[in-house]
Length: 190
Image (cartoon, rainbow, N blue to C red; front, side, top):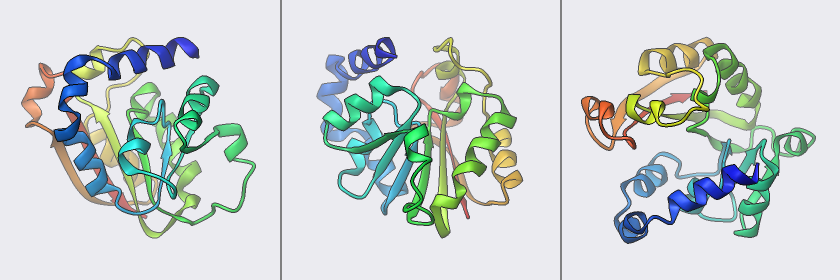
């Protein structure tokens, strides 16, 4: 658990990432996609929560070390087992964010996860799914299934969600074979 947090914080502190922070396209994209109250499922070390700001956004994760780190940054974050025991969050979020989470499981497991958290989204709220493209997928041995746009759209449709948009970010899809940080983004409405 702590090893995961250490690895992600080391990656975040690479000089080029620190220098590019003021013009970070990922930050601006997340803020554009999740402009209201957001629940991030699989928040990791809180990068997206940092982009979205406090106090109305909430993160959850299975990694206790990650949750402790995120909480130390001043964000609201829960272990999954603790969050699930609360009922006061039902239907209170404008957005559910699954960023770099679903590729760590099978499609069936991913659809089960999305369905589990749908009750926390307001009617008309959105589900935002972000997954790495091929180069990013191959870079992490903990990835289980490559989630291309077709699989993501189908997964969300199985969850009775209406697809609003699908895109490659920040570069066109063919860059995803070379550029480790190219992502697929699918947004659906509850």
